[in-house]
Length: 387
Ligand code: G3I
Image: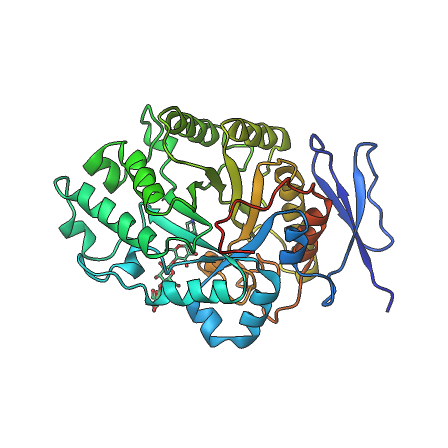
């Protein structure tokens, strides 16, 4: 059967977006649009990790030990496609800290070993967040002992994995302008107990415990046209940290996208430039596309999801400071979005492989943009234990 081609008209950076047609149908190409033939993905096309490495980039995904350990088909595709692994939950307080005095590294170690065995960069996620606390935390940690608990956790956890981690999401999602603080910070237990300096404390402790790892500030909702305040407050935080010589090396932009909300290519490009101008690298850390707003029909829904991936990546990968692309999951078989069920009850399809591990149009959109982007001058900043 003649392979149908999906023509992906890439809006120029200032373009209105992306126009996608299917065989025989060509969207009206504006002069500034480039049309790239986006073939339906084939099983034998080179994997994303290889396409990324050819440009000195990293591609990988978040996952959980329970998926890799119990599902050899999934594990096979994960090894094939991913040059980086982010533990989805295993390195969070709730999993690492069964009691105030104990650490349980079992599952984190399993994933770290898996990453080393299959030549993947390994990410640490996350040391400081307003979610994922263990049950004992609230009754045990207070303003008097919070600093000790924070530093002991970071020094122990980062020290345990020192030399094996590409980058740590040291602090996660602490900017929240809706809370109307002058500094734009989110009211969270750490802020209430320690004041805003907890952020600097965390970065300094983490960097001291593993000088080889990239120290990352990870944030959500920086991507959309409507996110002006979030971007401004995040940039201001990064500027304050850099001005104090806090050891922060990169911004993690999570990239949780959805159909209803548009990106503004000009705003996104300008924001990336401002972050880069601070001397920071950028990682796209949790990319996925919620498909709730799209029709139930799978071919149409996959096409719309692929369009969002393509539109976003055609902007962010143009920024040379972007060194890694990580999706929040690899296959629709295992998604966190299951708790974002569609109104029509159809299983969500936000990721690159379907539940049967077939590559989807979203896979092609990522592959196409990895092929189209420029080669970075040097491999992603990794410690010396990775190729
Ligand atoms: O493993 C237990 C299972 O034994 C138990 O039966 C079940 C009952 O609730 O819970 C399971 O743990 C769940 C865990 O995911 C593993 O699936 C937790 O309840 C659940 O809270 C946890 O959710 C994770 C969430 O962060 C909170 O840690 C999601 O999988 C994960 O995708 C999500 O990821 C976050 C990033 O860390 C930060 N950025 C946003 C992103 C999405 O929310």
